[in-house]
Length: 92
Image (cartoon, rainbow, N blue to C red; front, top):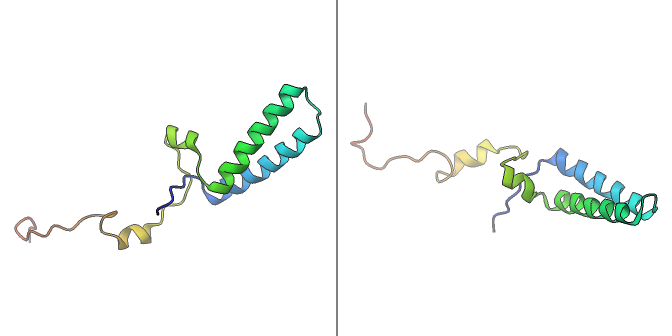
């Protein structure tokens, strides 16, 4: 099963840290009830997307902060360029 990630390492660590901070702040009840609830929801979303490494919003917009593994794509001909099997196509 191929995992589909679109969050890089640094962004994941930031999301996890921010999620934990937001969840902790929501527990202190420093905002009105709706504010604490909103802070808790945002914290949970940040924490979960950071742990999983995938953000549906980033996917919808087309943002991908993962580093591209060039070595992997070169070793797999289906992902890299494909070689033609017909010798008449190649020119010398």
